[in-house]
Image 1 (cartoon, rainbow, N blue to C red):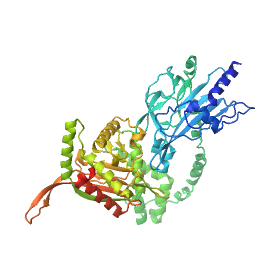
Image 2 (cartoon, helix red, strand yellow):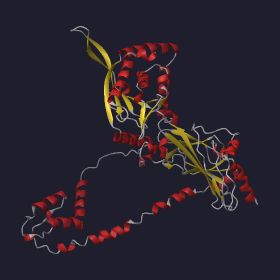
Image 3 (cartoon, one colour):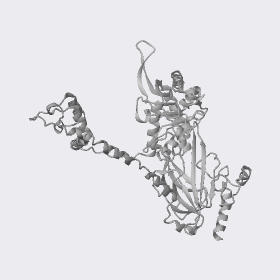
Image 4 (cartoon, one colour):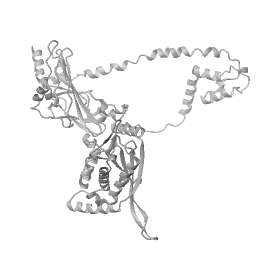
Length: 555
């Protein structure tokens, strides 16, 4: 009776699934017993059931699909899962969190919930394969950066359980049910945890915590056996062993080699021996008067002589002094950067346009604005802030460059969101300044500084780097690079590489007159599938106009 009442108690909590998942659509509950089935909730009843609840999910701002929840009395386990779709310019990002509720069939374990590794980044899900092919470096993994709750602590919906390190940022993972944290399966610092893999166990009653001290999730034990399947190779080895004996009858024909140190061999046999590093002195010739022929070399290689020569070469190579080196493991951001840039260069037809823009008026306007900023206590405006503003206005004037390629159409964005490349110790980040064409220079400067600081601290959230339509990479100001060509950041169609400004001698008005002026080279890398050469040149013309006449940016 106690066990039956416990099951009925859980059925009341699982009846309104929105209480567990805080989502917009309810799920159906089926197979509550082996004979009786409860009818699924209608959408009208489900919407009425969720009116009293407010969404708790802070890490996503999106709606959900219908979530199936099934309870099987025979298997004594229920799987709860939710899929969250984050709207994203050009692509859709799906975020999923899995939890498994177990019901003990005996007195060994009380009811509990297994919390799985959530999907908190676009590259942690299969949705990213619409842009990039599935790669070993882009497997859906996450790392546990820090646990904010300890075993035995009470947890409530909306409270942060732990910090999950994704490929691009460290994201907080919130609890979705009330209870107690019974066991931490994946300790702090655990790496490459697959999405859905159990990381913690929660229970409803505090006295049940001690029963999970030595608990091992069933999902981990179920995942290991399939790896022990490869058994077909052994029959192939038998065929290889049977194929080696045939050359032996030929070796019974050799005649004694001629006396003396000289080895007689045909030119073809000598060349074959040199190509395979085979010493002729170790081979008995079967040709006329003991001459070594091509067949002798081939028989020697087939009978295992190649392994002997390989061993000899290894011995000679070992004499070379070993190099001193250190192996640095790949970080998640490094794996993603490598895969995305390799994908970009292999699939996107790049071309490059370079122009020199005079920045004398730009520097003069910057000095005037900074004097106003200092007087009002504001932050100084950088040249990069002016470049971002000019690029955004040029995209508004030439919207063809503010586009993305798909197999069926070219998507042209109405929002002008500029990604700014930021180099950190962990790798390259590209946080985004959204609607840069509508913001002032001081606002752009403040956002860029804030995003750069968050990137260096590895605290960027998905909304800080998702949704960009164009990228600006500046190596001129911080590093003094004169000119370079950047790689297009997919799925975008163009990226601007900014070099350092330098003074040059330019002709004056008279025949013997000359002046000094500062010029900044910029290079536009374009996806030729989306941006034709004339369109790219038109965008550079508009950008150069804003840089050389910066007052027009204020209009």
